[in-house]
Length: 135
Image (cartoon, rainbow, N blue to C red):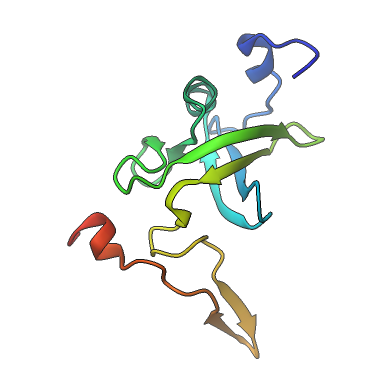
């Protein structure tokens, strides 16, 4: 952020949608693997910058969600980017514990379309019940 580094001017440049949200692609900084697609509102973006860890907006729970708050699998932000239209955010992170998905996998994009059906291609690294307990 060499131009203007003030938070107010920076987050004001994001083109939020009608619900005040922007999509966030989260990528492992080392492997380049896309870990997840999530959403941020202005508060989540500000909290992410302040903490240096990913904080998203949970559309299902309607609240801020600090990634790893329950599992311990936090995402340390190494780099934050904004796309050319200023309406999508890229987080490049170090994924603590190697698990980004609530299913116990490294990332959320573990299904691949093969012959007209979705096939799970990535292994479960840790049973979600061991991460979150019996939910």
